[in-house]
Amino acid sequence: MKRAPKYHLDIRIDKLTNSILNTISGDSFLTEVSEVNKVDLKIASKKNGWKFNWSAEFKMTDRNVYKLTIRENRDIIQGLLSISDYSNHFYLHLVETAPFNFGKNKLYEGVPGNLFAFTCKQSWDKGYEGFVSFQSKTQLVEHYEKTLGAVHIGGGRMVIFPQAALKLIQKYFQI
Image 1 (tube, rainbow, N blue to C red):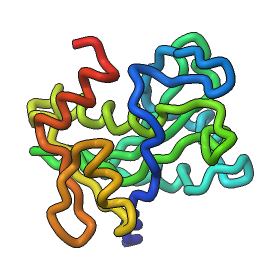
Image 2 (cartoon, rainbow, N blue to C red; image 1 turned 90 degrees about the vertical axis):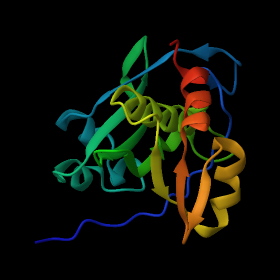
Image 3 (tube, rainbow, N blue to C red; image 1 turned 180 degrees about the horizontal axis):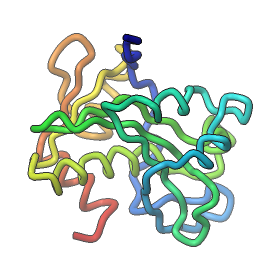
Image 4 (tube, rainbow, N blue to C red; image 1 turned 90 degrees about the horizontal axis):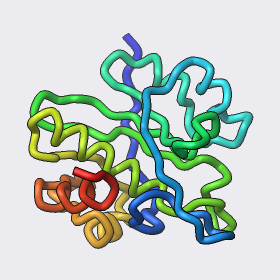
């Protein structure tokens, strides 16, 4: 049996917004998150500039892969995430912004924060009080503490507890 890869998240939260912001015009766009399908995986490939093998992630039976899109343009993927339901919290395996939303010349800000908030909302809706855990790269532990309110519990393992989860959910979702 092939072992699932263990990722250490290394995505920076560029800005917490209530949507995503176009870096050129400053316009704000409402987003939605939906499950990825096989057509999406042809777009989100390494040959198209994505860093991770999302097709392999999609095939893993212990996780679900979601895409973030702008409500008025559901054909362009802004970011992806992979999560698992661990029966008392959600575990965030992987988060990635689209190649055009990465680096100093990115087109949209707010994508990573939006994806973390979605995971917290999934946890909240499932009755887990927003609990989310993930594995961070060592150099980003402090960043996640400051931007997401996550707590480092040792060895790079991070937890978003209910109070911080609720702040993220309220920032991105009208509840």
